[in-house]
Image (cartoon, rainbow, N blue to C red):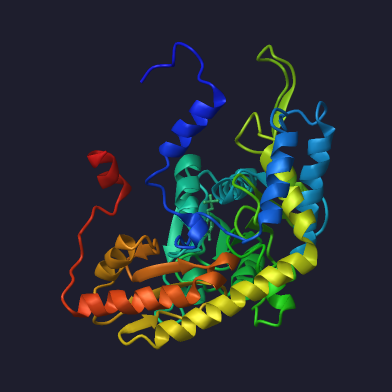
Length: 415
Ligand SMILES: Cc1ncc(COP(=O)(O)O)c(C=O)c1O
């Protein structure tokens, strides 16, 4: 592939671009269950497109040149901090959950170094997102993973307590975890952190923008945010249940002093003048910042409440419908809108294959299928239950798994 000798006219270029998408998952039809959070709102989509056009070229690296972006970022972080019962000020945006987690671990390592700990250690449940393992790998921090209760799928507090030692600087709880959609016992985890004078991060990348509204619509929500004493930071992704486009998460600290540890400064000895930034990225695209602000502002509290109700009703309908399909079960009643569907006697890989053949893309994990619901899924609930029923019948009738390579490694080898 080479750069075209002459630039293509826009129409031709767009034709090429669109033709190239022929084998993408069709998320607009609601047949995809993660990767895209579909609010079913053409109005919001128009707002987000308009806002990103406004900020196509700006760069959030230098807040003195684009103070409007610095204000949008602060306002966005503060709006989320308010939802999480934190304080305005000690938080900012990152490019996504993985970056928020990386920065949270970086801050913890900085605290550890101040305390003379040469190789810091963090303790998490086995169900935390792989972003923690990645952060630990990049930052040379040790991750100790403790087990989960086999029934509730929440991390085992006593195992976590036993894992804490002199090198431990950070404890982590998920709200909720990705595989099962359940919230770890945040109060207990944070209390252990407080006892030891160490940090406690709540990974609410998934739930951070849904849980506040889940509570407002009367759903049971165990304590998980800054109202829990001992929680020192929370990550929450606006590009998930905040419904902005990709590239927007917040990391909020309880205290300003912790936020300040995010910052990297160079005094100018490199020859290029003063340089400072609060996240790994240097140049930071403006559209995700403006988009995150716009999603929050455009939807407002009543908008998020409406969407939360839709997600809740869809979840309830699916939980009920799935448990009525013989052979299928939801592994554990989820706290939110994310759950695993497993079986004792039906090959769930074969079920997933049958669904995929029909253009449905539930995620797969060792225990079965993984469903992450967006408001749009309200439209396809019945259809999904029907194709699931049919897929299970096919598998019971002898359909086996296509045994497609399921790993990135295998995909790379065959591509
Ligand atoms: C619980 C949890 N934490 C962190 C992440 C990472 O977020 P991102 O993919 O935006 O980096 C995810 C992604 O699904 C998640 O579910």
